[in-house]
Image 1 (cartoon, rainbow, N blue to C red):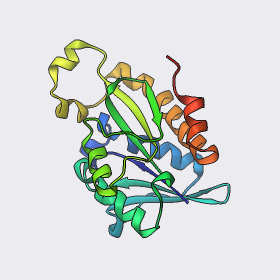
Image 2: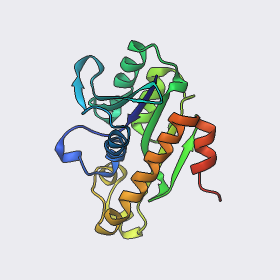
Image 3: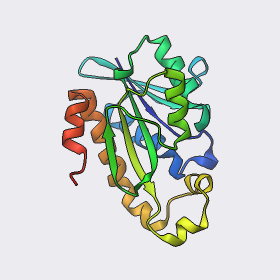
Length: 194
């Protein structure tokens, strides 16, 4: 069994914000896996879509706890299904990566991301795979306009919107590669060479 968690904030006001790119990727992944509709599961404080790939159960999870408490939802799912950290993938926005870039890692610290801090604290480990999608502003005037929190809760620019679909699709393909062939294969295939 595998669990893929897309990080975001619940509610229509946050739907198309930078912080919700994890939710957006899960919506595409749900279609690719032909998994069930997202349904609210109170015991997990999450919306869950259940699917299958190559005979293995796959759970797509959107925490409803708001970003800072994402770890509560992730921990409840992990405990219920008695899953190991290696069976967990987090899809998360990254303010330190340029917009459009992304990086797959097998483990690592949370950086300044409150959702990742919460997950690491609740699971007492940082040894789980993640796909980090860059949302850093390209233009200095945009960077100057917002403070960090306001920026991640802002929408994408018109120019960025046009580029968003292939970025989300690529992150989705990376998650599928992880499901099929593991983290090393996903990193080798999708991490950009510098």
